[in-house]
Amino acid sequence: MNQIWEIFEGPGYSNGAFTPENVILSLLLAFVLGQVLAWVYYFTHRGLSYSRTFVQSLVLITVVVAIIMAVIGNNIITAFGLMGALAIIRFRNVIKDTRDIVFIFCSLVVGMAAGSQRYAIAIVGTILLSLITLYLHWTAFGSRQPHNGFLRFSFTGHINAEHPILVILKRFCGNFTLISAQGGTMGGPGVEYAYQLMIRNAGRNEEMLSELQNVQGIENISLTMQEQLLEV
Image (cartoon, rainbow, N blue to C red; front, side):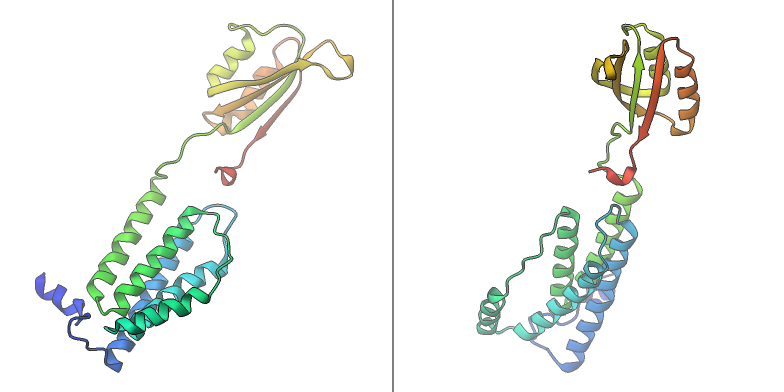
């Protein structure tokens, strides 16, 4: 294992061996590992904020940082000069998703490792980051079950704790919350109720609505389901 690590580790900064062959190898490795990160991001992305340019930027950032590390080498004067030049650039893009920031940071670190010829760290780090990201994606780590339905109906009468409407909701929903109860529109005698629901099985929505319609005095039943993509 130590021999394999030494093969991939490369000379690093200690030998100062920034030959053309080593620089080309570093850039090619940065390009490959940047694509791995980009593919993992593409595969695990969920939501409405997907951007093709952002995925391409993950690859480019990794390669650019590798070039910067090759330019700096062991020269501290070059490093300070490059820092001053980069300070002139203004980045005005607002990144709304914290996960996108993490992927940018991963690309920077992998590019630094590849550019400094620490190949083993770059490869092993990319593999572990990818596996962790896939694990978090497949297990839906950190997600909660939000209220996924919105029920509205009109009812003539008072709904107490043992009312048939609440009995039906308890059977089909894991949880439900009364949002509002106000007088009917156009001066009608009924009361308009609005509930947020956490439905156990969306495939039984029609059965739930059918049982609610059989309750005497209930009218104008409306059920709206929330899309999973709207989860924040």
